[in-house]
Amino acid sequence: MKFLSLTISGFRNIDDVSMNLDARHVIFIGENGQGKTNLLESLYLSCYGSSFRTRRTSQLIGFGKERAKITVRIQEQDAVHTVEALLQQGSISMNIDKKEISDRMELMNRFPCIVFTHEDIAFVKGAPQEKRRFFDQTMCLHDPLFLYDLRRYHRILKQRNQALKDQRLSLMPTYDEQLAHIGITIQQQRSKTAEEFNKLFPELFSRVSGMDDPPIMDYRPSWGSTATRDEVKKKLSDTLSRDLRFLTTTSGPHRDRFICKKGSADFSQTASTGQLRLISLALRAAQATYYKNKTGRLPVLLLDDVLLELDHGKRQRFIQELSGYEQAVCTFLPEEVYGHEQQFSDVLNYTVSKGNAYQ
Image (cartoon, rainbow, N blue to C red; front, side, top):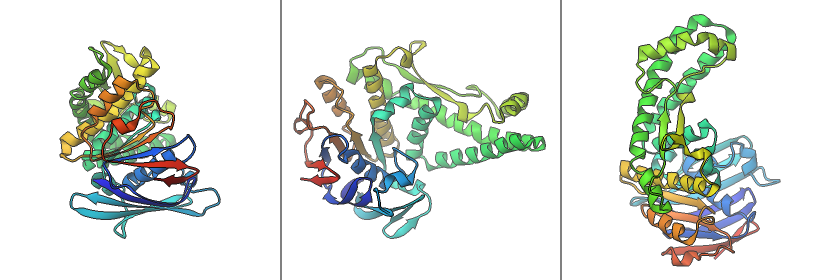
């Protein structure tokens, strides 16, 4: 897929912007706070139906505005489609070619888009849920059934937690059976993905960083790597008193962990900030490659000022690792040392200032 054009009104600090995006590389150049990231965010929203920066729709609508609208023309193989997002207080409605989309899964599977941001460092050093979110998104991009399984699991988990709070203990065996069934499926899928991902990520990181002994992403399931359904049900039953004490389910895929491991140690605890940043970039690059290998399709990449902290050699090697994409949309600060003109071809350049974009 490839973005062909973007029209925005009332989105964050962008009043009215319409721009051509029909190039393999689109570059937004501007100082911080001028709207570069907002433009990337609007493109991401058109592919996911949500923002990568906030869950509050009110923050996406410009000050003093009642609504915002984003219209994107997207080339999908030999066809061109129009995706529209209408944002009002508390809601986002999406449509493709004037047909309303009721489930954002349809967007994700049709318009693959991967965003690189500074916040991605949380996938390495952040809370366990951030690391799970990265791998779950990696899987959902190519496997809509995994997203369906996740939704079912969290629905059952919510019901079990409410039953714990209400002391409805007679319902526990039913919820335990359901959690065990769907939870083991999720665990098996995560385990397989982690194994496949670790065939891509370490080598990619090594090529960019020059490190001979790169880290891996070690998957540690809450129920253990070889748990059966009966074993899980017994574990849930045995830990019921603990669950009642905390009024929540204390084991399961929602407690799984991914550790960035080098040797036998957690590398995130000893790595420098520069190494952590490079690991987060390599994770996203591996995610793009993983998607391409699974589907045979090339994603669109959105890169938000993430190349700034790389030295010249690492930047060149990293860009070489990003060769498998249909289109890349990047933001740069004006004072960046290394000119993007020497690193990209087929480029559209825009200067972004005070919520406007100029060629």
